[in-house]
Structures are given as C-alpha cells and as structure tokens.
Amino acid sequence: MEELGRPNNEKEAIQMLHRYNMDLLPQKFGIAGKIWVMLLLLIIGVGLYYYIQQLRYGLSVTGLSDTVSWGIYISNFVFFVAVSLVGSLITAVLHLLNISWRAPLTRISEIIAVACIVFAGIIIIVDMGRPDRLLNMFIHGRIQSPIVWDVIVVMTYMTISLLLLYFPLLPGIAFCRDRLKNIPKWQHKMYIMLSFGWQNKPEQYNVVKKAVTIMSILIIPVALSIHTVTSWLFETTYRPGWDSTNFGAYFVAGAFMVGAAAVIAGMYILRRFYDRFDEYITDKHFDRMGRLLVLLSFIYLYFTVNEYFIPGYKMKGEEGEHLRALFTGHYAPMFWMVQIFGMIIPIIVLLFQRGRKPLPIFIMAVFVIIGAWFKRYLIVIPTMLHPFLPLEQVPESAKHYAPTFAEWSITGASLAGALLIITIFVRYFPIISIWELAEERAIPHETIYKHLNKSDEK
Image (tube, rainbow, N blue to C red; front, side):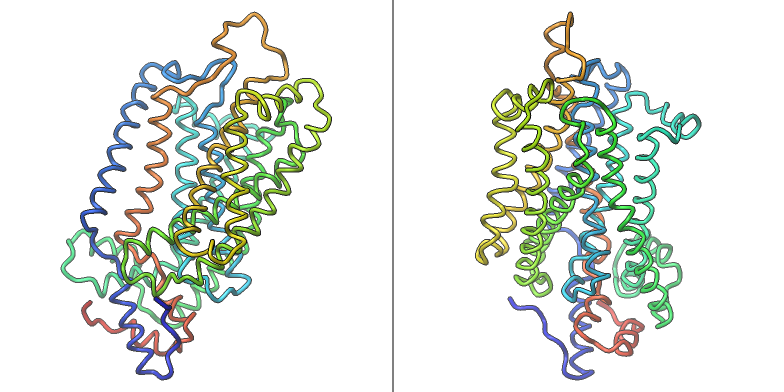
C-alpha cells in the first residue's frame, strides 16, 4: 500500500491527523504478541537461574579460564555497543541532514539504541563474576585505564540516548494520556507522570526541537567515541589480532552497518504485525534503508580488507598463527560464513532494487545481524587462544574454549531482555511519532496544535 500523501487543505489535514490517532496510538497485543512476551520471559527466567548459579559458584560454571578470560559475554557486550550506535546514525545524522523520510524510523532506532546500551552495561556486570566489585571502578578507577574510559563513554552515551528518546516522545505520552480510554488506572497515571504536564503548546514544541538538535550534535562524537574506546580495550594489548591501529574505524563501520540492519528488521516486524503500518513504513523506506545498508557494508568491507590483508600478506609470528586459525584452521568455517553471509551476499542482493523489497531486505538484515554477532565472537575468542606469550605446560583444556550452557543461557537472556524492552515500549508508547510524521507530511503547525489539544476519544 502506498503511503499517505500530503493534505490539500485544513480539512484533509485534520482527517489525516485523526487517522494517525487511530493507527499509531499503542494497541493491546493479540495472541501472537502475548506468546512472544511469554517466550522472552521464559528465556530471561532460564538465564536468571543460571546467573544465580554463577553468583553461587563463581565463573567456574562457565567455560572461561585463566587463558580465555573474555568469552561470549564480552562478544555480546561489543555486539550490543555496536547495535546501539543506530540511534546516532538514524536519529542524529538523518535529523541534522534534514532527510525528509526519516520520521517513521527515528523512534524505532532510538528504542533499539537504548535497549542495547542498557544491556551492554548489564552484560559487563555479568562478566565480572563479582558484581559487588563494580563500586571499585568508581572509587579506585584510574583515568589511565581504557576500561575507565569505556565506562565513562558508555554512561554518557546511555544518558544522551535516553534523552534523545524521551524529548520527542513527550507529545506522544501526552497524546496517550488524553486519547487512550478504558485503560488501567496505573497506565493512565504512568502517562500523567511521564508527560510532565505537557499541554501541546507551540513554544513547548520549539523547546523540544532545539533539545533534539542539541542532543543530535552531542551524540555523534560520543557515539564515535564509545565504539572507538571499546576497540581500544583490545588495541592496547599486545595480543595477535588486536594489535591494530585500524580497529577504531573498523569497529565504528561495523557498528553502523549492523545498526542499520537492526532498524530494517524492526521496520519489517512492525509492518508485518501491525496491519496499518504499511501506510507509514513503505517500500520507499525499505529501498532507502537498503541503499544506506549497502553503502555502510562497502565501507565495512574496505576496513575488513585493511584489517586482514596486510597482516595476512606478512604472516609474521603469532599474528600468522592467529590468521591461519581464522583462514584455514579451526575457526575457518565460521570466519568465511560471516564474511560471505554477513556481508558479501547482502551487498550483492541489495545492489538490485528487487533485493530492497521488504521481505528480501529483511532476510539480508537478519544475515547481517547474525553475522555481526559471530564476527564479535571471532574478534574475541581466537585471539584469547593465541596470546602474546605461548601456552606451555598447561592442561589441554586451557588451549580450547567452549561456552557452557550457563553462558549461552545468560547471553540469550540478555538478548531477550533487550527485545523485551523494545516490545514493552511498542505496547505502551507510539513507536511512530505522530507530530513528527505530521510535520513531514507538511501539515501546518497551527493545525497540528489545534488537533492535538482536542480530547476526543480514540
């Protein structure tokens, strides 16, 4: 179905705004939605059980050891940080460039960013083994440590991401407060509390727009810093595979690519399960996001070639042993599947217009997301098994790493937790901004304010 066009007069504008009310205000989940929430809660419950076991018995319930002290928890952390950069990519960059078609996608990207950066912080606490020692980071942390740098930029990015989500959401919360009827009292009180007395006044919108512009400017350098500093956690070691000056740009390029793929996946799922969303998230949006994903994939391909070609050309010492494990050794099947299915095939498919239709681009986005997770696994694990100093006089088990069921369960719970945050948000808040969409369709501000201040029932 084609998207709604621009109104020709005020009457059409009011009709369009009324239609937005009917289509975009949050709705109760059907059977499929309830099953989805129950499945996520089940996965989280299993993960919590094994995390309690980890607290009781320590990291011995995992496959981690003195040799491999970073496992899939750290892989998951880097993945979450990568996906979280989508908030700065879609909201900030497209906002500052004044891209006209961004409105239906901004809030999707913002909630993905917030959910992922929250669980990036949580999974680091899980990896610590002793969460009570987190306080030592703030009491005894040394500014010379890259870990302290990472904590600072993660917390800063989380704060700005929350504000960038919340400021444009204020009119939507007030909209829910005034228009949603027959809802539980707690839900209505939640809208009253979160709306902070919003009255849909023109001057309030002007403040919100200025705040969004300021946050958009601030979040871009912070977003670049968060993944650059994360890469420095690896680069500042002498381990083969991590001793690279390319890592910062490499990480940022990969983060933007997987972030764009995450937004495309979210677009498709929302359009698939909300019948009227195909009027707002159209084939045009998929086509343009597909073009953006191709561009970002080519950039990532360039940095990937830089990351492996020169070390592979020299193949010196421990670096060569590490690369042989990736190219032809134990990790070769995973390595080449990540490159082919997570990057090369999506690039080829999305170069063609038919490949940028909703279903094919969704499949390619899923390939990119899965490939990105396993790429982070390949960044962390093989290098830990090829340390700077050779492994001598250690048991054979120390030369291998296999995540235990406890690790997989906790990791799965973190992924399910991020999805649950997004799901709950979609259930209780407008996932497409009504007022931003109205502005995109060139509806006069006076008409928007007049309509939003009406209290007719949904």
